[in-house]
Amino acid sequence: MIDSLKKTLLAGVGAAVVSKDKVEAVLGDLVRQGKVTTAEAQAVAEKLVAEGRREAESLSQELGEKLKGAFSGIDQRAQQRLDALEARVAALEQAATSASVASADKVEPPTRD
Image (cartoon, rainbow, N blue to C red; front, side):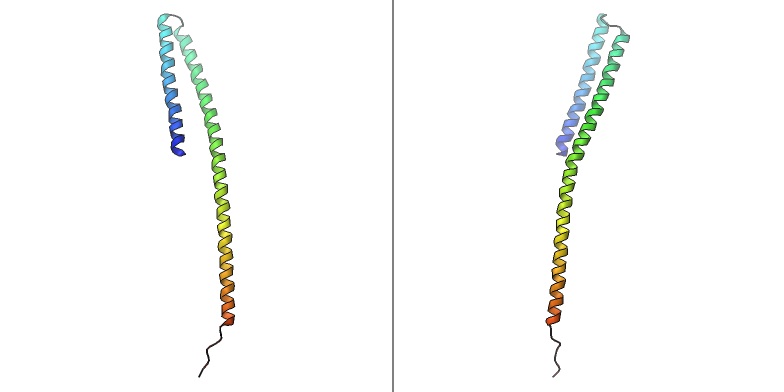
């Protein structure tokens, strides 16, 4: 699960890097063609970066919440299993103690001849 999560995150980062490079290339072409000014291209780039950061933060928070929920379920099941095992051990210890006391009561002291 962790490996697939890493791959997904790395793919997202890779896509962001490729997208940034493409945006810069397109904006550079538009500036060279005279369709936008350098200031306009800079403003668009800054706007895209800000939107990208907001989106990344939102996705990060959403992913964190989903992972927290997934691991919480795992923790709860593990805790339930641990509690059940502890109860079984306590019951076995009690049974062993009871059996030991019962057998000690039945043992007759050795006789002297």
